Length: 319
Ligand SMILES: [Ca+2]
Image (cartoon, rainbow, N blue to C red; front, top):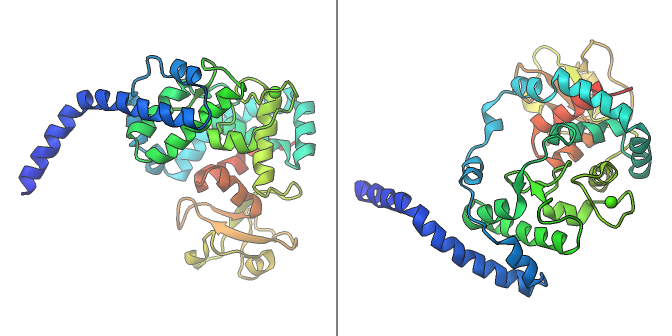
């Protein structure tokens, strides 16, 4: 039975590219009907799907998760590199007035806006070269989360229809994250901002809109502009690593009492704050004491690697 089953799978896999093309055309037909029912203009949908075919590279990338094969130490070295810190400082200086204005409006310290921007797209230099319709159609047709991507594809059409960008400018990552702050279309519809007031939320090419959209995302997710993200900590000998969990949140005083200290060995601040201990590389790796803002960063990307790196890069960009 097992052998027969595998043989059947083999035939399916070999035959699927041809089958896939026919199915894709069918799928596009069904999607177009739904989009038009939802109020997207038929000429826009027709134009957007001209020459679209599934992108095999997108499926390949969807099936592998590079981050999980790296330790946090390796990830941090790559993501919070000396080059990225240097460039970030240049960007802080170049956009100082705008960042200040956006930061004031949304209650977010500019260094966190710039850190997210730097990590997401290397300060706008690498915001993804895929045509979003092609990428999302591929994932909606054949991905592991097809319903999610189908909804995002519909959202992408809403953004186009509203005139925020054009079909040719609407580029994304392979997974549909758009522009310099890498918003999915659903996040764009909820949280993107037209900060320069030209009528378009342009997160592809307008720094004011990019910064304000990122800041608005944080603000709406509960960011506190008077607090930091957390800090590197020193654990006492014999620390019970079961205590290192985002599910466990305790007053700083409680952590101080069991011997947690700042990295340099000095006392924790006496602020009335709750904190959690995070060990991105597990027991024996670097320890971080993190506050509520860390959880906000994890709403942006649910990865301790990501959130800790944003915090560390923001610290490196502090005045
Ligand atoms: Ca704008």
